[in-house]
Image (cartoon, rainbow, N blue to C red; front, side, top):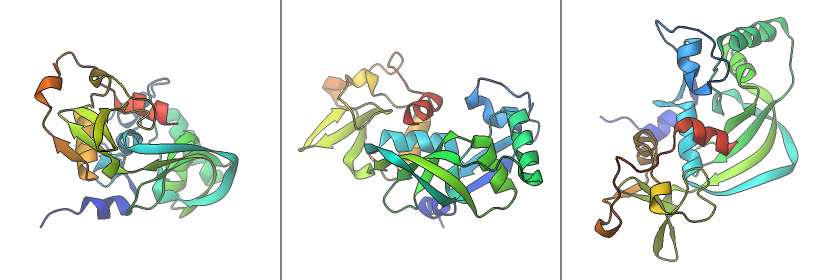
Amino acid sequence: MGIDIMECLRAGVTDLRLPGATMAGFENERQAGPSSTGVMSVIGPIQVDLFVAAASAIAIKRVELRPSEQVDVETRYVLAQPWRFDGMVDAVRCRRDGLRDERVQLTRIHIPGLPDMYSMIEGCHRAFAARESGDLVMAADVQAAIFCDVSAFCIEGRVLMREMDGKRSPVSPTHAFGSLLAPDDAVLTLDIIYVLQALGIRIFPAQRKARLDMSVGKTVTAASLQQNLV
């Protein structure tokens, strides 16, 4: 019996403890979060930053919310990966002592068939501390929303394509709702492809006339996708 990935995603975020992590506290390397904190935050089988990056790749629209929405959101759907050990420990201590109760700043991610989820703008460690404390909801300031539609996209080889008016055109994995690109600027990394495949994207072989030399094609890392999304 196979695993239902969508049901795993609906269950929300889980924080896994990693044995042997250095907990070195890299100040400026968010992508080093699991190795620096000893915690890997996953939604289903997918690390949360990678999931946010994949969602960015199938976004058809982004809306800035003016004014922002001040709401309580379910903690399990806040895609926060602690990335600095000292910051994580301080946030957990403050949560325990009832300090620093300000709202986290979020971007809403809407994917049909899934609950609304939220990527981080500010307050990553406080969001983790709320999960760690068992809070079911947290106070949030939702400043933007992105709307995703996996059916509007496909992958040819490793190139992200948007389908419009019966035609396929390469688009940016970080701004899929923006202007069209040359194919070598739309190449996806394999980890993003695996997530998009789990979400149901269609994958086709590269067209012979547009086949890329993948050894030199440009790729986009999950960390850069996260930064561009928020």
